[in-house]
Length: 298
Image (cartoon, rainbow, N blue to C red; front, side, top):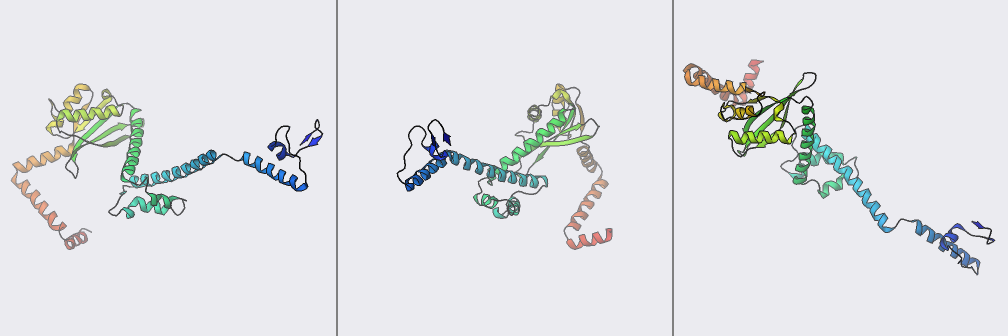
């Protein structure tokens, strides 16, 4: 780097390190080499990122790596949910999710250490991920249901293995090509089985899904008094809010009630049903008899 007004020539590193009028004058050739080396070191050191910058860069790299591994875990959970497979098992290290992650660990760097740490493999975190996936699917379904606006609802009560009563809520809709869809939005626990409580749960679900009750064109329940009662049942309460919601009773439940009533009034029908039930139990209790029945029917 030449400066004509000073009639001198400076090295880039020496000029950068000793900016200004001050510049050491070397006495010997060895001093010049040492001064030049010191200048190179100072300039190189100034060009390096600070410790805080290096720490932040390392942190960003670790975040990106762990974010990628978390995305792989979410993909594995989505696969198990889509296939209807259990995520957990009787032994924690042998559960389906862990085994699937171990399979992916062969081609994903850092996944084996991720499995050992188990920071995002706790039951709480996995349940939260499943809930987020479920809500995202419901949002997509609601978006498709909201396009034609009109819809029908199907509700039925059932008890889980703990004896808690839950309401199965289904939306029935049709697209522009007149293809009918039935989408189950979920199971909702109800404290009481009264018509008022069930109606409140139904309206709360529709409100959360941003669906107007005025757009309902049909509703289907079983023939229980709390559901199909024409005075204060769920059907009557929904009808008072939307007169266009046509009520259709569940045919399967109606058939079951009709058969029960028939067996009470006809002894011959009752005898036939009892004999049929005894034959079924007799065949199911023995693998040998089931094998023989399979041979005869084929």
